[in-house]
Length: 379
Image 1 (cartoon, rainbow, N blue to C red):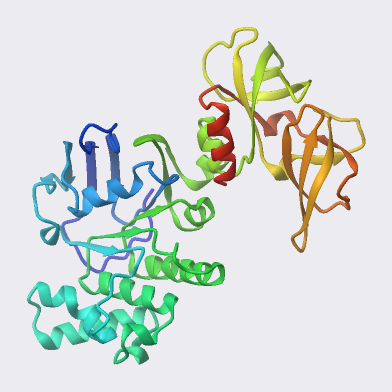
Image 2: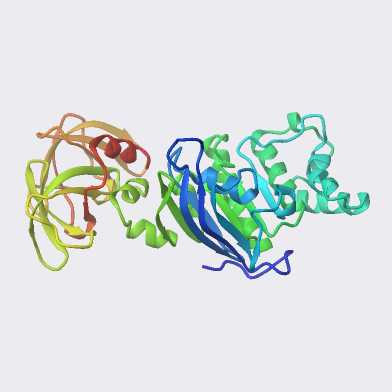
C-alpha cells in the first residue's frame, strides 16, 4: 500500500524487492528463511514479532550489515545485496542511538554527509534542515549527553534523514524510552513520514506501535513470514493462532473439535464446556481434532448466565485502568481468562462470561501449550 506521494530524494526509486533472502549462522536453524517482500515508494512496513524471530536479521541484511546466505535484494531492477552498506543509500536508526559522545548534535547529524564527501557548507545546511524537521535546531551545539533519551533518538533520526535516503531502516528505535516518550516520539515519526513522503522499514516487537505507524505489517515466526497485510487486515483477521496471540488475542487455549455449526461456525470442547466459534483454518476438521481457541479480552462480556458461550469463572485479580477494569479470572478447569470491562466486579466473585461466536476464533493447532503461554504474554 502506497503512502504519501511527496518525495525528497531517490529519483529512480520505485520498489525495493527481497527475493528468497536467507541467513544462516553456522549449523543453527536459519535466522531468516526464504524471505520475500516488496516495498513501494511511500510504504511504511513494520516487521513484527518476538525476539529471535528474524526481524532484525532481515533489516541487517537489507542494510548490508549481514551477508546473505542465499537470495537477493533488488532496487528497481538493480541488484544491491552485493554492494557495501555505504553504497546502498539507506538511512539507519538504531535502538541505542549510536551517537558520537564527543561530537556536537550538528556534527553528529553531519557525519553521514561527511562520509559521502558533501561540501562543508551544504553539510551544515542539510544538517540544520534535518534538525528543524525533528524540532531540535536550537540544540545543535550541545553534546548528546546534554539531551534526554527522546532527544537523542531524534538526533539519530535527523542523521538518517540528512543523507536524503531512498529508504529509512529503523531497528526498535523506541524500545529504550519510557512509555510517555515512546508515544510522543511515535507520533513524531509518523509526522515526519507523512510530511517528507519517506519509505520506511521498521522493526518492532510492539503490536500497538506497529498498528499506529505502518501501512503494512509483516509478522514473522522463527525466521519465516507468518502473515502480511494492512494493519486492519492483520488485526481483524489473524491468519494463525500465533498471529492472533501477537495481535491482542490474549486468551489462547487448546481445545478439541466437536462438530460444525452454521456456515464457518464450529463447536469445540474448551473450559469444560461446549463453545461455538468461527473456524479460520482451511480444510476439513476431523472429530476430536486438536484446535486452538483465541478470544480478545475486550470480547469477553460479563453476563448473567444466559447468552452464547457462557463460561463461569472466579475473578482473581482486578486492576483499575481508568475507564475500564482489567480482570484475570479462573475457570473450574483451571484455565485463566483475561477480560476488560466497564462493569463493576470484585476479586473473589463468581462471574459468567460470554462471547459472540464470531469473536471466538478457532485455528488448527499450531502451538504447543508452552508457545501459547509465551504468545499470549506477547500482546
